[in-house]
Image (tube, rainbow, N blue to C red; front, top):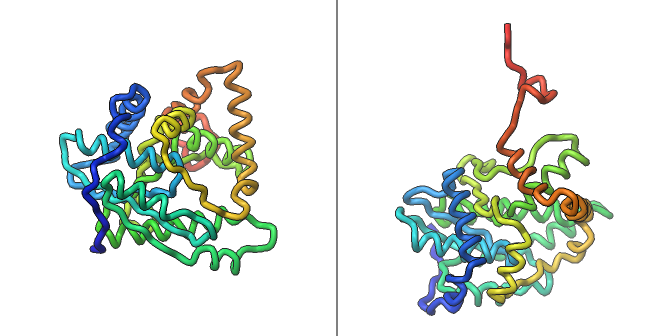
Length: 268
C-alpha cells in the first residue's frame, strides 16, 4: 500500500459545521449513503478531489459523517494532476494540509498524451476524463482503497439523463454505486441528492479555494451539457419540482412500459 501524507493542523473549517446549509448537505449525503448502502464498516475510500466546488464539498461532508459514523471507515483524498499549465495543485494541497486530511497528490502526463492523440477539432474532455478515471482507479488500488467517491451531484445525474436521451438515444444516467470496469473498485456518488445551487452556496459560505482545471478548451467543450442546464432552468419556471421529479424517475423504472426487447417478460 502506498503511503499518504497527513498533518496535524487543527481544522480551520470547523466554524461552518453548525451552519444550517451544511447540516442540509450532511443530511442529504447521509440519506444517500443509507438508501444505496454507499459506505460500510471497514471501507477505505479514495475521494477524488479536483479542486472544484463539488469535490471539496464531498470531502468535507464525508469527513464530518466519518467523525459521527457508528461504524469505522477511512478517507484518503486523491488529486490527479493532468499536467495542464497553470493548474494550482499547491492550492489544493494546502487545503488538504490545513484541514488535516490524509491525501495523495498524483502527477501525470495526461496533457502531453492528449495533445498527441486528440483529433483536430475534438474535445479534450472525453479523453481527459478517461485518462483521469483510469489514474483514479490505479491510485485507489495502490492506496488500498476498496471504494472511490466522485462528486457528481443531483444536476449531473439529471443532465446526463437528458444528454443520453437527446443525443445518444439511450435511457441511462449514472449509478449511485457501481463496480468499476477493473472489477476491483466500487465507484460511489454520495452527492446524488444534493442540488448544485446548494453546493455553490456552501462553496461561497466556506470560501473554498476553487481552482480551474486549466484545460485550454474546457469552457467551450461541454456546450451540450450547458444547453441542458439552460433547459432545466427554463422548465423550472413553470415546473418548480422538475428536478426532484426527474431524479425520482431514475429510481422508479417500469421496464414493461419501455421498448427494449431485452426487458420484456415472458408472459406465456
